[in-house]
Length: 324
Image 1 (spheres, rainbow, N blue to C red):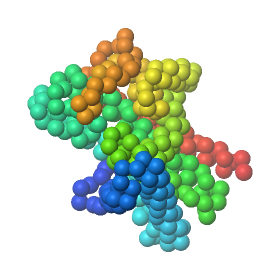
Image 2: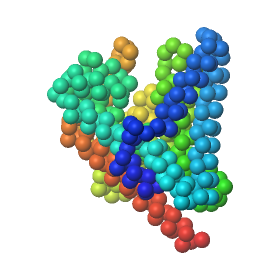
Image 3: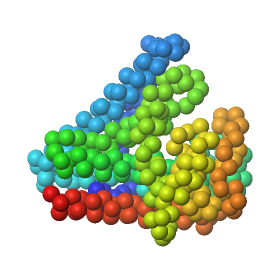
Image 4: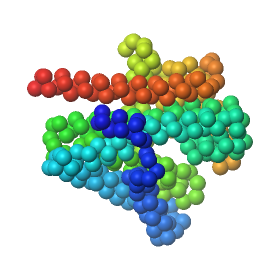
């Protein structure tokens, strides 16, 4: 897993290589068309179809990861590199950094910055000024760190723990790819318009469930990456939970609130989605708005916190081995 994190930071998601998420996306699109053709506009049928898509995709992704794990155990020389690349594909540390820096580098060209921002956020970007673009970047750098980096890392670590207990159980890749399937379902189908109001419910709820604990672990451990003592961890979690409670998402508000208070930046406010205005809770309103420096700091803290998680997991594994 350390090697996978390093490979992700070094290479990211090269365009010339077929990515597992692209394969998942193709299957989601194909199955969505099939379900919509059969279910029509009947909500119950769309919900049932969404459940079937979710179960099929998550199970298939998990089983594919499990097969690679078995291959790596049986043929380490050949399977080991495949397992390494598979684990790296579940992480999005470098791709998040590149996407955020791509928008920053486009400024002050608002047209280009809005175009690049539209590729990584769900809100409308056509009329955003520079201050709102910077706020959107700070929010996506904090929220997507949980979704794209720390959540898959959490499921990898959990899978590694299961694997150490019994190699026949699902391990780090099976759990990480299962999570990526749920995350991809949410990003493609988890919207509240048209048929997706019913079709995307199962995938969105599963993603919320699988991100719930990693999100709160990030809020708890963030002070460690900021160089603060362990005693600040509980206060960080309590602030994030209190401020994030009013957000309709069970995780997005909590993750953004943790970064807002931890890094001293104001987040939240008025957003527009498909032309509809949505008032998001204002997080850490006494702090200054986001700027280039705070966004760069969020990305640096993400990398530092990733190292802390790996170090703590390694320490836990070492202590467990000693106590056996």
